[in-house]
Image (cartoon, rainbow, N blue to C red):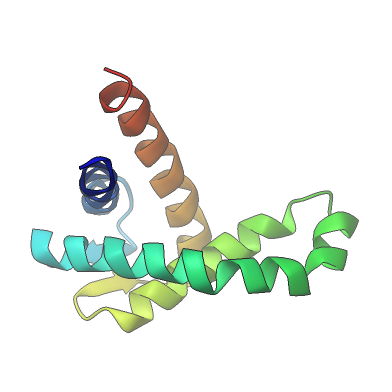
Length: 113
């Protein structure tokens, strides 16, 4: 049940992004549901491998390279899902940051009740 709630929170956070950024578009709520699932799978399967491979860059940039990795994962998910469009790499980095903040805030409000 908790996993479904987290998935729905992430979907709502993803569905809110087009109102905050013009460079991100989501066609429908069902697209947002599928995109949230793909984003979770990409972050679970591919992100840890990239974090290990880019560890020297991450240490050299004092952790700021993780923003680049998060943007790449967000952009990759948008390329995999039809109806979820991100205009460019910088939009993906900012979108991933906003997505994380919105998801965190909604989780803090709803899960700890």
